[in-house]
Image (cartoon, rainbow, N blue to C red; front, side, top):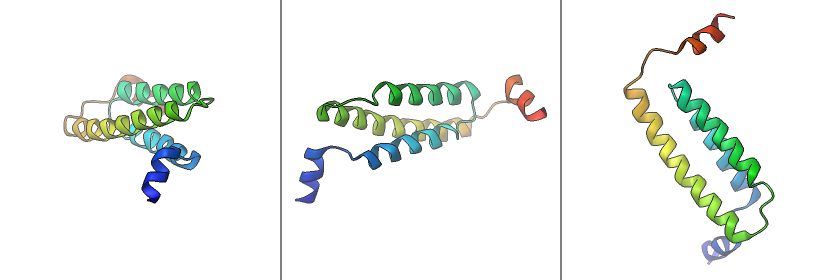
Length: 97
């Protein structure tokens, strides 16, 4: 019964913030600089763009899309760690300064 109520209400603010933090945390695990930076920028852009959503159905759709993206990012991070490459010059330069 509680599950039905939660599904009709949509995700809470805390659940959305938790999803955001998890997406950022998982994206930072990417070895590839380009993928990591793209994912971080994309996540931040999407959340800022949808910050003012008032329609509960739209919020549910965006939340579901975010959960799917989190699953994909986790899978890709795992695969990327199996086939790591040398760091880019931009990554090594920031570590030297």
